[in-house]
Length: 90
Picture: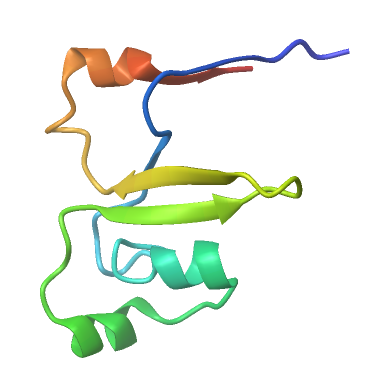
C-alpha cells in the first residue's frame, strides 16, 4: 500500500518544457489539459503570437470542485517558498 501525503497551500504548479520543439508547451497546454485536445505547438504559436509567461488551468473534480493549476516553463522565477507551498509527496 502506498502512502501519499499531499500538502498544497498554494495552487499546484506544473512545469512544462520551454522549447517550442517540445510536444506540450505553454502554447498548447491549456487545450490539452482542459479540453483533452492536442494542438501542435507551432500552430498555437502562429495563432497567439507571443508566449505567455504562465497559463492557468482549471480542473473540475467528480464532486464538482474546481482545482486551479498554474503552468510555467521555467523555475527561475520561483521563490523558495513556492517550492514548499505546492508540494506533493509520494
